[in-house]
Image (tube, rainbow, N blue to C red; front, side):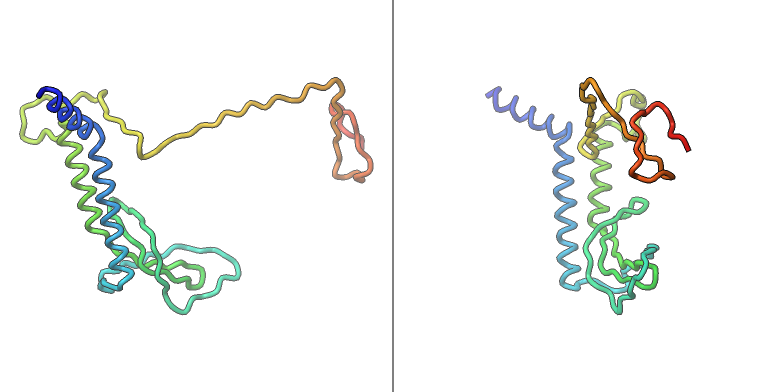
Amino acid sequence: MTKPIAILLLIIHIFNVGGYRFVFDKLEKDASVQLIQKLDNDEYNDDQLIEMKVPLPMPYQTNWSSFERYNGEIQIEGVHYNYVKRKVYNDTLILLCIPNHDKMQLNSAKEQFFSLVNDLDQKGKDLPAPKANIIKTITTDYQVTETFVTLVPPVTESVKHIIINSSMPASIALEDPYQPPRA
């Protein structure tokens, strides 16, 4: 009887530590897929579209006669947008976007759940404020990978360096790396 209770409490603890992030990420991904399906089926109102213009300084760029369907996402000031259409005109990329309200609501719910789980919401309570040095860090958003390379020069007894002066013909090469070439 105590073993199933211990397993249940362990599952709840693991979910509180970081499992909810996976649940919310899955729900946000599903909301994005549903919106893309609606956009592919033209189930949106043209009045909801927001136009974004991006400079596109490319030489010999041709103008497009009409918009084409385009998939993608962008987040500006906390608002999630999905690309609907794009067009190149002169030196400008014109993107028509639609706000993804479902994803914004899920993101807001995720933040509220995070603050409730970690006692960050102290409105109207007589509890002391959480300590500033205790921060919950989850590194699933950004993973830093570092690569260290050590270059070892080859060990040879006679290493000759060839220096070619740009003002001299290429056929004249100097073998002494320590003296500058004579003009």
